[in-house]
Length: 350
Image: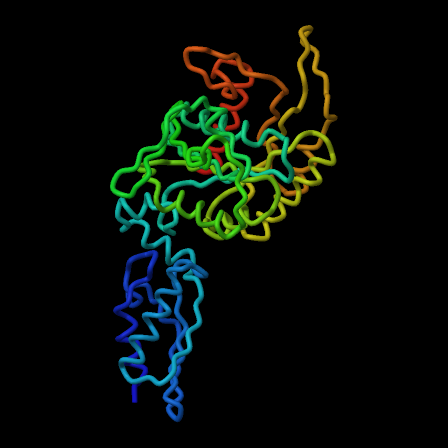
């Protein structure tokens, strides 16, 4: 008959799949109970991240090891390690661990950019914010996670394709930003008709199989709304922050509140709200509030966060030699607004 000490010795040698430290080192064996009459072993295990494929693999390994040691049946419950325990291992993490975006030890700051509905200029905000952060000297990656309506490559004027070496995908670098998009892998702008689970696998590939290297920030241009892809991102990246994009119209702000509520419900911090299309400036210099006023501020108050900035209606100046039709020059008035928003984000996160 197996006893508690044997169980702890056996399980103590297994590794937390995310921290790559033994369960003995992490104090991950929370509880062991044995029913001698049934030769049944119950264990409660704490790991860095639950509800993942890695947890399932560890679960199978625990059952295998305990049955090899003599247990007839095994019951397992998982919980997450306290944040302070995970933090205590950060200082001893390897470079590979701190650059692995899905690792709890990652030092990459992940920012998901969301909206309640389409047509509010979320992708325009995403690309300009990524470029603004790069202009501040940050190492930036950008995932075009709007898999049905990918537009980032066209917006940034990207013509080349990612390269693949040793089963690793190397993103395209444009304006100082490392970019990956579904648009790189679809021929002739073909429509995407996959179901949610398949899309989740593509996103997982973007996190796991892309060679992001040393980056400080990873921005995700999410699909509009609160569907499967947005939920997959929330579950895969529990530490990501969120920015909500809206227009000034009260209805748009009301719909955007749903995206903010989803972030809050999945324990994601909302960094702030960006109000796009805030006004149109006429040639005389007067502001015309085409879509009304106040939606961004109202949404920020509702979500108990900051209004990071207001972006006017407009269009960047195009340069045929360096064509990036949606990116504002850093000296353009709107480019300066994006730079100011990027500084606010850096101040909040660093």
